[in-house]
Length: 111
Image (cartoon, rainbow, N blue to C red):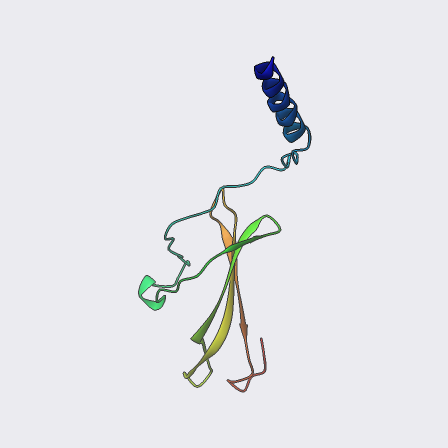
């Protein structure tokens, strides 16, 4: 009789735990993109692209990665100035865009 009561209590406790569990999200989650990736831009030699590192985040369905490059913009006089780069790409195709924002450090105004 004591074994039956313990078994009943264990089953009842398990039922409460299962009945109050939080349901899983129905939205599919893409696996993270672990690894080392290389950015290639048409018309730019790889030697002109020094390595940068960081963590990308998924925003509006695209992986995004911002980076500030100390010498990322070339001024009209040939000097270099800082620039903010923002990369965004599709996980399935790895195609994407890069947006470059510069300050007015070159004298031409922000762009």
